[in-house]
Length: 429
Ligand code: HEC
Ligand code: HEC
Ligand code: HEC
Ligand code: HEC
Image (cartoon, rainbow, N blue to C red):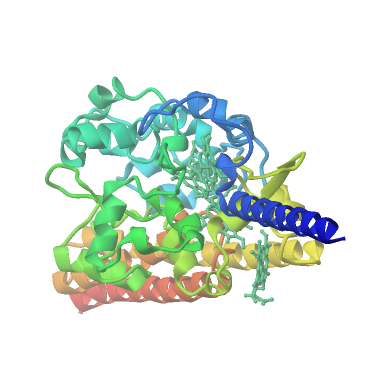
């Protein structure tokens, strides 16, 4: 009896210890980031490895979904990946961008794997194009930035830098090779955050699931000296804060060929628009939640790296959080149509302003200070319109903000037109 109890105790002890060990191991595995779970890495990936196919040996699901971005070509009503020419669809754009390379070519965007091909084939290129234009197009960048420094990279002419650039966007633009952590790779983003007193290393995982996109999907400019890539975020990231920054440093991208105004070309401020207190942002939703939804491969769960319009797969992109997927897609359609129609009216107001300023400029007796005032209003109106137009979601990322800005843009454009009319009225008196 005594012996039996002893054996039981020992056996029970062993079972308890083994169970605890098993639970411990299970908890440990659960808390590991997905990539380290299960299979051993096949290859060692060098720091900042530009070739995504090498990373792909360790992470076949992420790689194969990433490669799908190469052949997507489906259009949605206002987005998608069919690279149509926007200038043909909307001829007013030629007037709005007169004197700017965007009046020569403005293609709809496509998936990440095409970024390099598309930048090298845009009709906007010229001999003066700086290497800086490669900043958002290639997985070679992190390595080049660390070897040459960004200032040197940006000073190199586009054609010359192109000899060192062979890979489109890839794993190295968003991940640290050793830990697979999401990281900021673009020095311009690091510097812009620093100016606001922020350090991305303190950001939460959910914040990083949006911030990695801000390596590229943001408004930026090149300094006149050295074409240094800079984000105009010193005073904040909403449109008024960026305008105040540009006005303070007296920056302009080009002189408008018809109105003579010193203009700002806004570039895809997706991150800024989204984070300007949108409903989803305030609810803690990240870019990756909609654009990189989870998928399954047997027991393994992974993020789809086939980054594209969520409207092409709303069940996955929206269905994780919204039970009525048809309802929310219908909401997208309504929001986008409202924003599109409003934007068309803004464009008409801008074209009227441009024509009025042009006519007044040709009048030798026009009041020059009124004309200058009209040009400033043209700049203010168009940079607002462009902030919404160059943003990629046709307003969906932040509907109230998009409509607020368009309302201001239309008002400023009409003020510009009136002021130009006054410039010649004064003259004819
Ligand atoms: C709540 C879901 C959601 C979130 C969060 C979200 N998006 Fe989107 N995004 C959309 C929808 C819907 C569209 C419109 C797609 C269309 O018109 O086909 C879109 C469009 C886009 C497009 C253009 C796609 C195309 O097909 O041309 C880009 C680029 C984009 N988003 C980037 C971002 C970035 C960067 C973030 C984070 C700063 C973000 N999105 C956050 C839902 C979302
Ligand atoms: C290294 C720069 C870079 C990063 C980082 C980046 N993008 Fe992009 N993205 C681009 C460029 C450039 C394009 C346009 C490529 C083209 O048209 O050839 C693009 C296109 C897109 C599109 C349009 C795809 C289509 O099929 O029309 C979506 C959506 C998108 N990005 C979302 C995101 C999201 C979400 C993130 C963050 C998880 C992100 N991007 C991170 C540079 C980047
Ligand atoms: C545009 C940015 C971007 C690029 C490019 C990118 N990833 Fe990711 N990746 C993400 C985001 C965002 C997540 C989600 C991370 C999270 O939830 O913590 C992710 C997650 C992962 C994970 C973790 C498991 C999972 O699927 O959620 C692995 C592994 C991974 N990526 C591998 C790759 C590989 C391999 C490549 C190149 C073929 C690549 N990634 C390219 C943004 C990117
Ligand atoms: C990660 C979760 C998540 C995902 C993914 C998501 N949403 Fe949402 N959505 C929310 C939350 C949270 C709200 C806030 C309102 C609420 O609490 O119901 C919201 C609100 C909305 C609203 C109402 C917006 C407003 O301003 O009142 C619409 C429309 C919407 N979502 C559409 C979409 C669409 C379309 C997609 C897919 C492209 C999507 N959502 C993906 C979580 C999500």
